[in-house]
Length: 187
Image 1 (cartoon, helix red, strand yellow):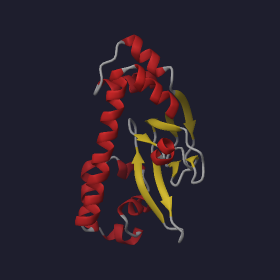
Image 2 (tube, rainbow, N blue to C red; image 1 turned 30 degrees about the horizontal axis):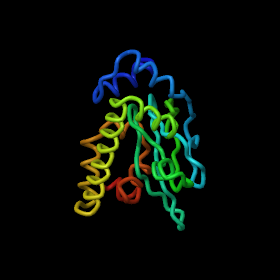
Image 3 (cartoon, helix red, strand yellow; image 1 turned 30 degrees about the vertical axis):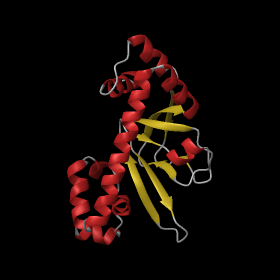
């Protein structure tokens, strides 16, 4: 399926746009391809885009002062990724985004998103819905970390996103769950 159709179907789940409106919206996206291991955002960068994944898989992560990696998000097709704090507050990136696999994305600048939201109510509705969905997912993940042991978090991830286990190396799944690779093997 082509990029235009993937995005159109994604938006149509939440917002109704005419063909003309969608053509206008789509004209603001830029298509980009990245190779496995390639960085899209590095801590310290200026961030001016968010990325809609068409194919492949991204990871958003933070590396602390002890050089330990903490994975915030995996982004598979029809998911969005960026350093949203840096994007929305015009600050330098504190997280990194890179490619677990070869990945094709559509990039939307912050300025273009704001412009589209102010011009087309249904686009604003879509982005508000998407943001709310992201908040809910982040809250559920945080509550899971506070209330569940590693085994339960592992089972929850497997149940919610079984396809991750065919795409993402086990050491990255361990980093996402906050456990060592050895602990993940025992689970």
